[in-house]
Length: 408
Ligand SMILES: Cc1cc2nc3c(=O)[nH]c(=O)nc-3n(C[C@H](O)[C@H](O)[C@H](O)COP(=O)(O)O)c2cc1C
Image (cartoon, rainbow, N blue to C red; front, side, top):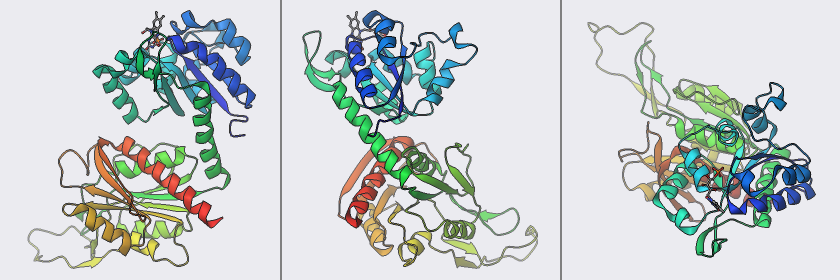
């Protein structure tokens, strides 16, 4: 059911398992999907364009500069057409090219320009798979947001045994079905999320303000991941240098007070993720003119900003079904975070050690521990904020599905 009317773009690489792509095409078609196929130059040595076009009922795409395309840019239009992209088999060579951002044939150019979920399905000899270079590429590709299916342990075509065997066509189809099942659930039920991110600026006079080092990247990546899962996501962002993607609705704010008001306007919501580093205090008054050096000025009176997480957690009328908080700590990280989760009535807390160099505020990397109400903790070692966001989004998705099951 979940693959009915889905458009799948299959990229067939040059490995011995390429023949299994024919089975995958048949299974996808039986489930009601339409399939278009890109065959790499080496892929063509393993399967013929004739077999693929006969099964997929579509012409096979091989060349970036194909004149049959009547001026249409296949490297853009193919990924825009697709609902998901599978690379099968993903050879060691394709992994290496993708990891360094190559775009020297139709397959790699489409993948670099892709705006859809890409599933890499590796298949190679065990030595090729465990080689440091391949593992480095694997980590890089993971951190770019590619999803992997397999590889599995098993006997290979070359007669050796180990990790590197391609997942079976049935395993591949079942992963894809799960992906669309979850995505369609969120879309059909019109599940909504708000994500707050970034710092806030609390002005003292027209040019001076209280703020912090938050870049907003972690919350932005979470919002993107939630949107990718089919959740209607609104990002409420303090001032950042991010070029926001069109895939999410963004509401820009400056101060904590504005952020609080916009959050309130966006209620009710099914999911709320509070990752913004809202300034706890704001100046009681903002000087109309720039304060001069000569002026007597020896104190700034402060008042508290509203605590958005607490407001949502204690809100009888509008408490989100799933509330996720962030806890930026410099000491006693886990205990402080668990206490915060309980105090603010949230379901999940993401604990963040902001005292470490190279992770946390204003960098591209993070290291977090995800804690839930049942006491499950999941530590994610230093990795890109994109990667961390994909794990947090998955946790949000699964927890939300659990809550829904219990409510039904
Ligand atoms: C018979 C044969 C089988 C091969 N099988 C694989 C394989 O399973 N995985 C792999 O990574 N490379 C395999 N290779 C090497 C790839 O074909 C080679 O690296 C090629 O450049 C990959 O092309 P691609 O980038 O279009 O995938 C094989 C080569 C031969 C001759």
